[in-house]
Length: 384
Image (cartoon, rainbow, N blue to C red; front, side, top):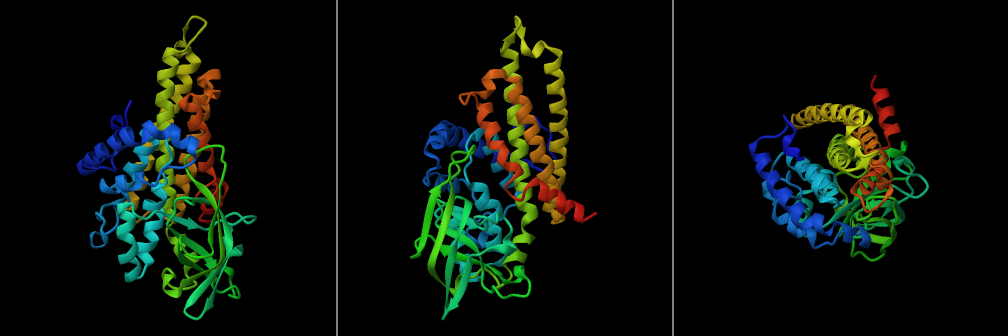
């Protein structure tokens, strides 16, 4: 099976040519090393410049800052191919789909000139530090502060569950620059913190139940001094900036979820045609075919909806509620398909040596990160 066999409306011939390059990279550079990276609990930094050379990192960055100035479809192709052929979480989507947008939209000219070319080339790896121990993603309750001292901020606090935390050279840190603001969200700013700053420390590379190669860390800030020019955009506007970029972040999650669900389905169709029970292939049982028929139908609907959402995003019309709905539906679908496909593998599905087991474990977190699916329902419900 191949993603090429699925009719799509969100891509053109240029997208298709780019996909061939990305697929070759995933098959040659990523897939053969995926198991080792899982064991190491990290993807080597050397992979990033290789991806950068092929235009796979931050393809939407304007040309004047070293990018290709392309549309979000190119990001999506990287996400789809990584989910389908790569077999390893790479951390690219955090940089390309989330972090870089903050710099493009809200960074000063100096910040753009300094950082964007490095993000595009893979010379610099980024992370964004929002979540804190004990309060989860409730940004308004964050305890990390950035207090002014002359022409510097002094950061103190801790963050957790930070993707790319071990590899990151630059961290976008959400901190309170005005703890006394009338409304908590009004006092939040985003501060750029270079990883070589004194007082910045990486904690553990956290042990997860899935996505083993994705380094996920605790980060600590102990009197970390950074110049006030490292504030991204306007002081106190951080919460607004974060909320404005959520539709693309959640669409990105939906893209990867859909592609990984398709991969699980395709693997399972192949498996049940080979696995035998009571002297015949499992595929020959009506229940197997009915389950697969149901899943295939839902995947077909999923691809159509995903293209609708992507085309909306191209036109800058995708709303917060639509982005939330995409994240909710596609990650719920991903889990339904993963669980059904594992069941059809029988006992083999519970063995880590089979790809479905790894995919099943990795899928569990997608209903949590980017905002839990319960929060997605709340956001959608508020718009009714």
